[in-house]
Length: 50
Image 1 (cartoon, rainbow, N blue to C red):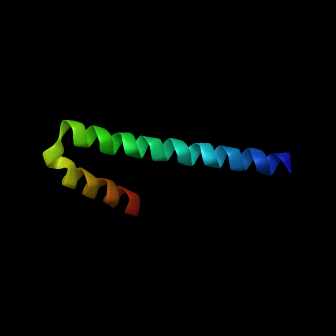
Image 2 (image 1 turned 30 degrees about the vertical axis):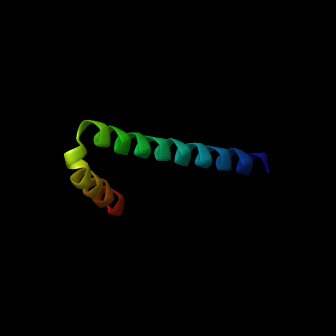
């Protein structure tokens, strides 16, 4: 029981970190390269597909 709870917590932490990193990447790409936002988004989408 405690093992599964720990696993679930780790998974939730992992996804939260991934989500925050993804948002930060989008935010920085938008802040520093507003013109290149589209290409950056396409790159991220391709990476997610693979």
